[in-house]
Amino acid sequence: EADIYQTPRYLVIGTGKKITLECSQTMGHDKMYWYQQDPGMELHLIHYSYGVNSTEKGDLSSESTVSRIRTEHFPLTLESARPSHTSQYLCASSEYPLTLYFGPGTRLTVL
Amino acid sequence: TQLLEQSPQFLSIQEGENLTVYCNSSSVFSSLQWYRQEPGEGPVLLVTVVTGGEVKKLKRLTFQFGDARKDSSLHITAAQPGDTGLYLCAGAPGDYKLSFGAGTTVTVRA
Image (cartoon, rainbow over all chains, first blue to last red; front, side, top):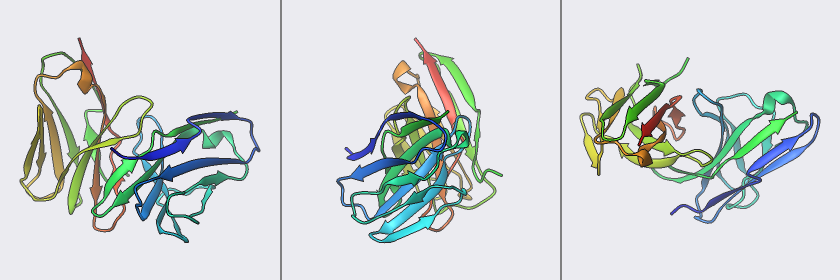
């Protein structure tokens, strides 16, 4: 069973706040990803990393940033949250060939 | 424009009935995957198909990859309430980034 964790699971905050969504995995996977999921829409890749000190932007433009200082940790930060950031954020890790293990997600609501 | 089109978007059936979900694209994929996501959880990988024409069975679930590797289907026989969830297909056009469909929400009524 996959061991990938996300905190918090639910977050309601006001506009303009800085937030960090945490994601950790204990499988030693080099590749990690952040996806955004909205009802009726495909999952959009917003950031990914192929290893420590490697981060790339995904296909969906995002105002968030990520860091990868340790293999197991891949946090996502929003410097100034807006209502348009309201969504479900899914973190995943993988080993070749592309078997993604997803965390339970963080449901973010920005008022 | 979605790379992967899933149909139908919603499907509600009675326990014991069969169902089929489709995943179509105009692009060729080196592999296609199917995930199931339950409410409040992340998607969980069900199967990966890599060879054109390949058929894989997982208990009551049958997965097929099209001969041209552009489409796939998921068939569930004698559906049970535990099969309820969002079914997502995902494909890798060639690099290490998956593209996902919008999903099919399946509800199996007891």
